[in-house]
Image: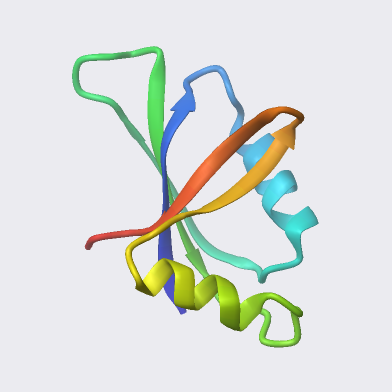
Length: 90
């Protein structure tokens, strides 16, 4: 299990929408979901997802390598809009 971070999401984006988009990736179920508001910008929030990886997903190993190397993966939710997903630093 890893905790992932989407560092910048508009505050108007609902948790149901974020969870639906994540479910569509089939990367694994969300075990814990947390929203944190930005300190000085109330128009955005940070999302933390504790995820149980789906090891049967064809890109599972590649995505974990990318995240463990300190890079991000992109989740396209409304083309061309994307969320950058990082490994959380907690």
